[in-house]
Image (cartoon, rainbow, N blue to C red; front, side, top):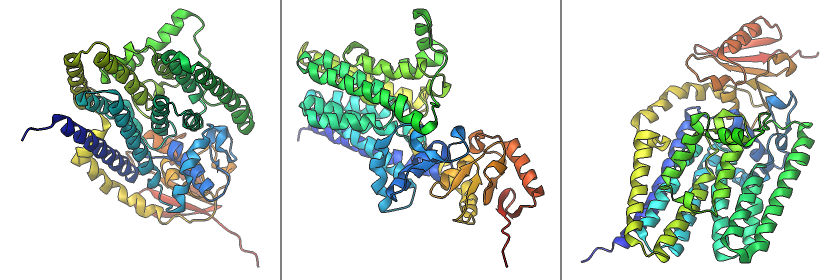
Length: 474
């Protein structure tokens, strides 16, 4: 009986998506159980989603926006995240958001697969594109670094391109609004999508121009009206170091070398094919422009964290278009096969040897052993009261985001909390204590031991709960 290579590749592609999604869920959950998530950003978003699920205003703590709790829109305008609020009607476990995030990306990959099936003849090319889509280290890092509105963009982006292909414009605009509602900065991405439509098919010029108009108006209202209204005029993520001439602009894309390496590895993941699709280039480079030029935060420059996640669908669409041209216009079937094999090989090399893709943790037995060293913290958290204002460090606050929790300030007395919770076990990451540092928190412990307004309970070696004395009236 003759083997049907096409069917085998189809099954292999679906299997790869399922196994990848399972791996992403497994790694992100275990990182959560190992206390590798924190209040910023996981706890802030989780708290807002949980409150909306319980019909409360999404008012959260944000140490950079004052000592009083603020509406989450004072930081980012991301109303679309509340589409996940119904999940908290069925459970209070925070892990549900991490599971949902990975599942939504997996569904996005399935949509990419079905779109590729409608576009290409080569099953090998389709398999290669899905390997690149999910193998992209920028997306892997997004999935294992907590939960972010930016990572959720993968699914609406793929639906947007599917509806463009199908010319289902009502559904297209619904998905566009959902995408824009994930983050105020996605207004630039919306403009890039509008340019994509305009360059792709002039017959849809009105759709393209309306997309650009909606995106620009949305971005203006979010940045100039909504966020300033809730933040008293502060926008935390603006840059004061914008280039003032063409040379500076070019340099801001290339230096430090971390930036051009990010672009190099991103395009290399897809065999450099997206470079040759002029229609998607504006949307791709809008992402780099936003991160490299319009932002001064170096944490956005590499393939880490979540800022690269929208690039995976964009690069996929660019590579898909070039494969289509090679198949239909030039009939280069051998070249398509060679490029597909090259993409698969490059993803293996990038993931395994050069960039050390973080989902490799899934098959690393030492990764799971870390859970044993975190269980003492889980036992400690059970002793924290459910009522009152809890003042604690970044990592512990992430676990307590369904309670009235406040993170560290320079002076704890401005908060006047009912409980102060500290974990001073040596060896923690600096982010665990953000915005303070380990030595500052040790000094805080010493101050509290001298503060007659608080009594202390110690658990193990370096775990503390300071409780405020309550004076009972006769």
